[in-house]
Length: 341
Length: 257
Image (cartoon, rainbow over all chains, first blue to last red; front, side, top):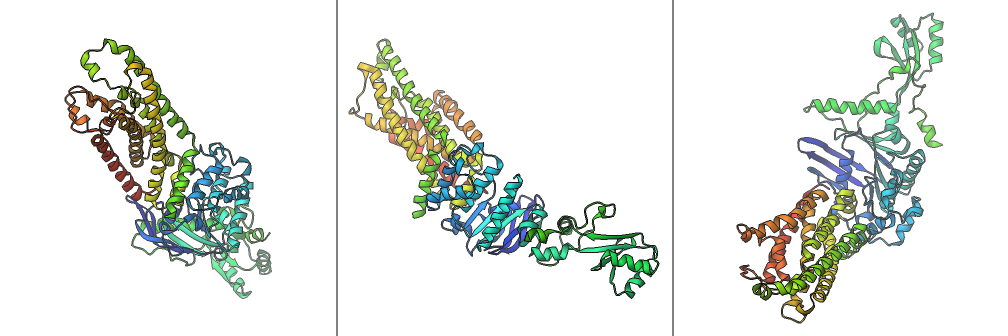
């Protein structure tokens, strides 16, 4: 368990992390989401005691990182795939880390095998590709068999096979009851791997919610209906027991009723429709709207910050939907199916 | 503390698993011994034509250490690289995540590197002495002569202290280029210039290398006004090193990695 309390980091006048309070729990993959420069890496460095917080604290199972004895057996972290000496062999890199934490030497070969680097164990790491460096970094994180794992943008620069491998690895680690904390700036990536979601923007907490709830709140599907006889359309819908909400440009938005049924209703009452289009707000847009809000909050320093755990703002409606843009449903719609498969 | 033992073992793995360790230390040995032998050979040929007062002040032991001035540069490179390769490669973040007690980390790294340098430095010093004395032929000194053993062991201590001072400075500066860019000209040029210009000589002799090299002298030069002895000079060098170490520790402890 990682507990952050009012964690704050200033670099000169810049506020990188602003009073972050949240808890990363065991047994699930917690996604740490935010646009580039939101403060994700800074936060992770503070968890590891690499950067000193300006204010607030972060505790690992109730203790400061610097108080941990053999910290690699508590927390394994991959912050930067290239955080190693290029002239050192892969096995020596892991061996020096193992020795510093009293981890048996035999564990080096085990983790190298686990990440599939046994054949290059005796090669110097400067010849490694980004993906191999990433795997070696993960081997180092797993070395101490830690209960807590932290990965900063682990899929960056990986090929599809590597991405698939990391996704499965994280899910497996969480299913073993470990705490998995992984950062990304891609909502789509988090939707595939994370069970819980912490969203930050400009160093502030914007959301702390379960992934399922975030999707329920944000991937709303509805039908947009537009007619020159707006009032008659409303009467017709009311008469049929269909609730409609006002949308943009005089359109109406209807939840929970298929477009076919609405078209038939309009035809029965000889109503002219100018638009009848199923809509799906994507998670990516919900995320962008959420983090764009951070700029607003920032501009009004006196105003309240986003309520942690509160419902995120309503998603924007995709603009291109009318002109046959994105396929109905967008990428977020089939998330549940994909995850189950 | 068990942790210190673990970290020492880890730092030993680190130091033996990079190539720069071997080539810097090997260069130090070869350069120090080779230049010493060369100067000793020239001195033997020159001895007959020397004025009497220079013959009286001729120090065969110190002459065989003539390569130290050049050889110490390789030791400086070793010391700088041992510390700064953590920063230039990004390894420091991995290292400090593994050993978050930064004082322990720095202490163990410097202890392992210093022990290695002492072993190599002592071997170099003895090799330079015996090779140099062989080249001097009839004018040679013997290990049993007064002060000679101290000077030869002192040669190893001097190299060790130069390397440790470089490590401490590098811990403050973090960048290999910056550290070498300051230390190399300082020890190769500035210290020599300050020590040879009469106006600055009084200041120059308190610099770490000039004070420390006193320990390698057996016969004092003519008109020697140095206000400290061999161990006094070495203590001055050690004080410089201690100050740099404190600076390196304080900065490492409070800086973000």
